[in-house]
Amino acid sequence: MHPQRRARIQPDMDFGTRLEWFRNECAAAGLPCTHQREVLYRALVEATDHPSPEMLYERVKRKIPSISLGTVYRNIKIFLDHGLIGEVSLHHGSLRLEANNEPHHHLVCRQCRKVFDLPASGVHAIRLRRALPEGFQVERFVVEAHGLCQECAAPKKRRSN
Amino acid sequence: MHPQRRARIQPDMDFGTRLEWFRNECAAAGLPCTHQREVLYRALVEATDHPSPEMLYERVKRKIPSISLGTVYRNIKIFLDHGLIGEVSLHHGSLRLEANNEPHHHLVCRQCRKVFDLPASGVHAIRLRRALPEGFQVERFVVEAHGLCQECAAPKKRRSN
DNA sequence: GACAAGATAGTAATTATTCTCATCTAATAA
DNA sequence: TTATTAGATGAGAATAATTACTATCTTGTC
Image (cartoon, rainbow over all chains, first blue to last red; front, top):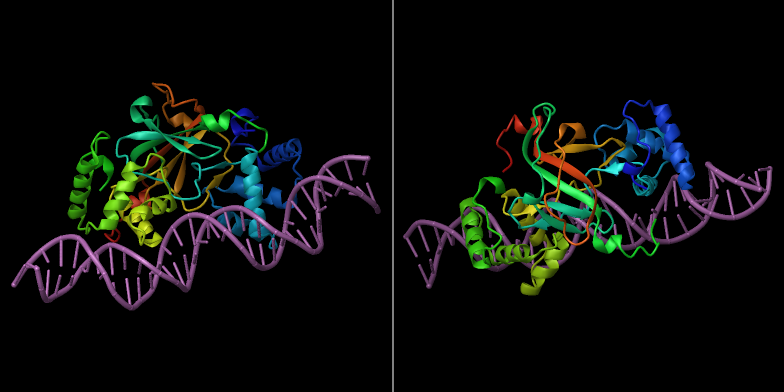
């Protein structure tokens, strides 16, 4: 149920093709393909700025003035759960802090969102193969390994999903 | 004013040494080194679980029952601004979404938090050099390049900081 | 077209974070 | 030490982000 494991959308697909894909995915998942969902998905496909739920709400409202913010949040969560869309770095709901000043990276569990440290020495150095877009000055690379922690991976009592 | 550019704390430093470092940093930054700040910093040094502000508040309250949540938030922000602590993946304040299903990474501006796409093909493959902690199943690696976008880097009108 | 499962809009409730302001305290100089 | 003062604190109000609740409405199926 993750983007990696399913037919991949090509960036050059026109929206018609994507919409067809979206409908198939909904059908396969047993999700009614409502007008709201299609418009929301379209807004996501057309966005290039990694929008927040609020931003999407504003955009979708132009097409469906009666849509409610709750519907946007509800469907975003459903889309994420089914791997139809992705989130920019796993969102923890709140700021997460550390005093560890040593260069290191993180393992993040996609289920419980627990964070584990990963010493930088355990990760192959990162090198860029091509120039970065327009004057972006990179200060450092942060690597996050996303997956399942032991706890979440093991005793799958078939509850969620 | 970033952790990379200053004397680095060693993980095996005892707390006394760290506290001394902390006091020097405060002095250098012109920050009064209050009791609350020391206790908060200590809680951060002792934490291994990447706590949220709320979690820190609970812990610090055991030492200073009268401390307020506002003080915790205020000082966290100050510590972050001065590079005394770090945050686990740049926090956007809200969920940020994308429909782009292609393997890719992100450039994130540490100032304005704008996000730019970075095709996976532009980044050297990541390889782990050593085993991951206790049964963590990695599904994919996410790379974030943190730095300053063109806009934030260029016209520094000396306002913030 | 009728039914059932599930979705929607609207609103209330929660959680996360910031702000305001009347005191209070750390750092400095006498 | 004490006086001074810039800046910090605590308490609570205000705002932002997210979730929950519920009466009604749609989608997908027969």
